[in-house]
Image 1 (cartoon, rainbow, N blue to C red):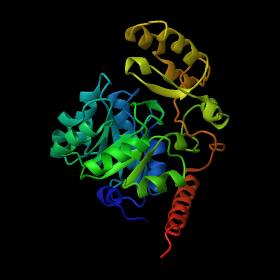
Image 2 (cartoon, rainbow, N blue to C red):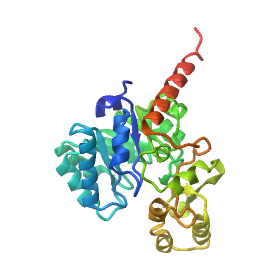
Image 3 (cartoon, rainbow, N blue to C red):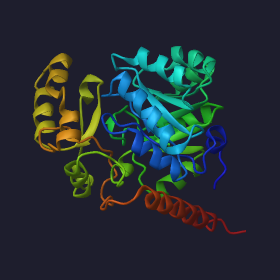
Image 4 (tube, one colour):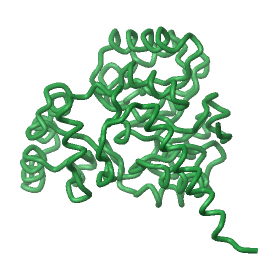
Length: 317
């Protein structure tokens, strides 16, 4: 068990939060993270309100009424306000809020007893959500899978951590204990990880999706939509090549969104890793096997502690 501002805020053993992944992050994944000492997050992207509510109830059935888990509020989703009302009604322990300005949602969440963790891409937005009462801030670098900003995690840690008082959670490209240790040394109070947990036995993504990640290397990561301020990171395939050709041939944002509509679901649920969008972060080379969540978490904790202990030997008195 570790002690950071995030473990104290959320009441978890280790400051490791599972990032929400559309069509993927459901009850079984969230419950497995909680049982292993971290905090799982149920996605709202790709799910209906009824599905999210069922996942909330399933986590509590598997883990008990006092289980620590969250729901992601994706502000680009058309049902975002209904999801926000749901998490307030269900009194979910915490909510991560991304893909937009979290500020208007913080006070209503607090009134319902729900902690608000805002995902931000800049110092200015970090300070704004802090002023509005965010309990913690998640800074997500462009190394992350899915929707991205334009700054690296290192740049975000350098810029944001000294600029706010609330706890900061680092996200983007962290897949092992070395990355966790680096974030903690930089002043983060915890980390959010997504791609690493795709290779857990408990993750219900299509087996072909997992195999695509296992066989990927650092050269296989690509970003679409960068020129339109609509960046999404995933694995290079036939779909991304067609998208990028259209993007840099002058297609409009509406045309590009039409081109990509349904591609994440196709990859996640149907296993089409060629014409579907296999969302994943940049740190791919050493993700090469599927393991039980408990084993993954034990390895993360052990490697983090080993790395921190090694770092302490650098300074000689």
